[in-house]
Image (tube, rainbow, N blue to C red; front, side):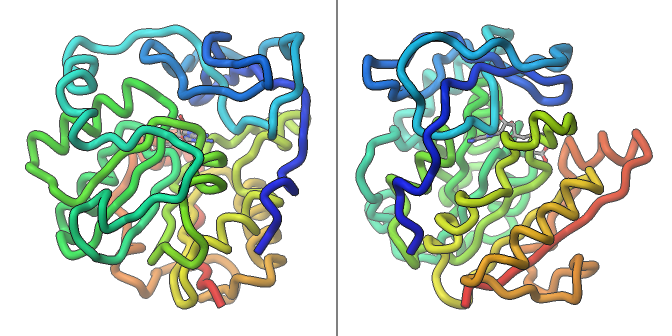
Length: 283
Ligand SMILES: C[S@@+](CC[C@H](N)C(=O)[O-])C[C@H]1O[C@@H](n2cnc3c(N)ncnc32)[C@H](O)[C@@H]1O
């Protein structure tokens, strides 16, 4: 298993970018550089083009794949957070989760990183009541949006962690525990100087692979060709993983990997981007 402290130290990241971006509010950092979950008003900033300057202060534990800003959350999303987070949210804590306790039963658990507004999560979870889904998202409005769907669709098999997925995977997911992982349309960070913020990169993928049970899968999708190629290189080079396809996966064989079109998927299609899926299995 990849050592947790192999996640490199870097100076603090406080970034925005032009696609699905966030700017960190500054609250939540303690003297040791640890970041608490983003505040409830943290939102994406689709108009931002560049990361904000790195703040002064102690080093953070790893480069963030997102950036935070204060922003808009609808009344309904905020109400859903206030009303439902206690029931369906799992507060971040640096200790391994007991999935039996979290979901109230023993079933295969699929982790989704960066579920955005949660439409895909809810659709897949509704179609697979026999599987439990743990969604991780830093975007507060997205957390509210998925909580609303959980309520409206009466989903019993979805739980949410409102926190940086790198820390959640590192601290809360036991080794060999997951039946699968979904990473759908992660922030592309298209500028070369921002590529270091991409989520599908080492050492995170080695850590993530160690949390998947042997025979479990990792399904990534992107509409950015050069990120797709990076994903293929990173996943193909990870010794714990083996590709289910010769390159990109055209028709993922596992039914859980037949994802509905996501919001950012649709956006990519509108912009004339292609879509690339990758499905790898944990050895
Ligand atoms: C481009 S959106 C895609 C959302 C959704 N998967 C879709 O396809 O519509 C990427 C999402 O990943 C989230 N994200 C990025 N880095 C994250 C991290 N380290 N932990 C949790 N969420 C993260 C962002 O907040 C954003 O909502």
